[in-house]
Length: 488
Image (cartoon, rainbow, N blue to C red; front, side):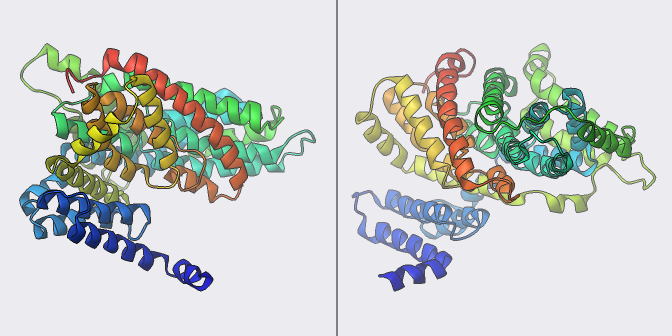
């Protein structure tokens, strides 16, 4: 037995691939649930994809491409219908957001924003961390949580280095570094106040649009969940800085000098920065005011995806205004885009569509609903709890792609608004805080060496419980007043 376990450890990926294939073949030929032929094929394909996602047998985007091959071969759907899922409008919404984030990073606008917030907040240890939380939280409203963490990470490392060189005898510099690194990751995760802030948000909104033909307004989402995000950021500050990891670092000239020096080196805002900021602000303004503009005229109808792509395209059109005479973005910059995430969206949409068409999700939802509580608030708490702890051990994006149709089927069976369960599931999937593999931001900061696993587990458990409580309260009491389908 010991030899067998050691063999699996040395060949984890081949073993994971073999397990997925065994699941596929078992469900395809045995048909243990006595399903019709098409439903049986869809279930087998879903088992293969989900197992390979969870076990990390292949890169997530590669697994997401399987429907293009499997679904036509198994006569589940035509190649034309399957590939249409990879061109869903929500994929292009995220692409537009990626392009804007790329321009912000290319011209260091993110660094200027962060340093100015720290300059305003002061150089006291607690206030520095609060400044990073505010800066990271604000940026993550408009950029992906992974991109935001990557942007803030080198700045935080520089600040930690300066603080370690400061010789305050009462200071706990280890706690400062620990809390600062955690704050970057968790503030990015909790910045779910806009649709485009995290991949799971985009994936769920895309599912709702595909399933019900209902578009969740950018402004409506922000009106409900921006306050929730702010509450989570405040909880992050209180838990890490004031409770678990106090640093006792007082205001000092070294840190203030570092921030001033960085801003001095950057100089005045450059022309490319100003132009990126203008496009960014205009895009956000149109996202927020889109519904008002559409109601005031009937010549054109603005859509979130249209606005995002317009912003992204203009970045390639408008000159940067510097001596190189190049545009703000050049096509070679696009090599840095997370194209794999877009493929993952497409594969998830394709899988969810076929699970729905085969009736499997309605069957599962009816079964769970018939054996679960009929109290919506308790069900929201259960869904949020399951979601947040599941996302500790698997990709939160893959999790939302898989769970969205299931919780929708449960809601339909319970005769409640599907988004009453779907949105808390999505927000909870963003909030995993206990393990490095919970979200990409967690993994990024854990790799810094400033965080020990026991500390992440301790802080993460507290933040997970707070997230479950706040998400449940907001989604039960406030969300139905602003966001909701007319009928499930």
